[in-house]
Length: 157
Image 1 (cartoon, rainbow, N blue to C red):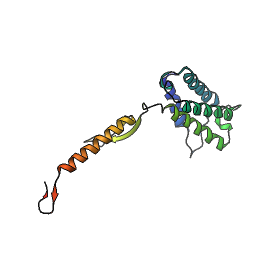
Image 2: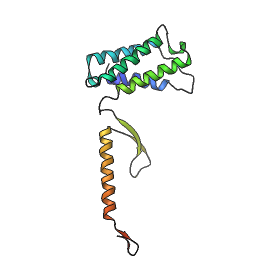
Image 3: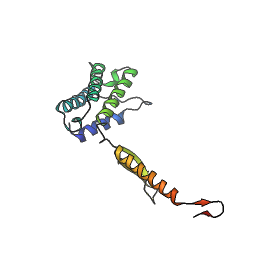
């Protein structure tokens, strides 16, 4: 399954689940087809699954097996009791998080105001980029505090 279609499926599943509202029914066949695609890609070790740790692969497979048991004989998620629906949503979220957490390639996205503007933009960075940015900011702050000399008599220079 290619990345855009995987993303579209996960986005569809994420947007249709709202814990506080009546859950729209998700077709069991669609969920299971998506999971078969993920499993096939993991078995073939394509793209993001090449360097996936064995423990992560085992966790995904266990979650998929539990998902298959929960959805067995059901046409859609409306046929499940509320706790089972919650468990299905939790399993899908867990699988999504594991699939997108391969190495340091995952992105952490935040909404930030651009300098000189009130408009918010979405900025995505890898964890290593965030660490580098934080270290650079701390170095700049340290340099600035060492440059400024303050005393009671003269104030700050």
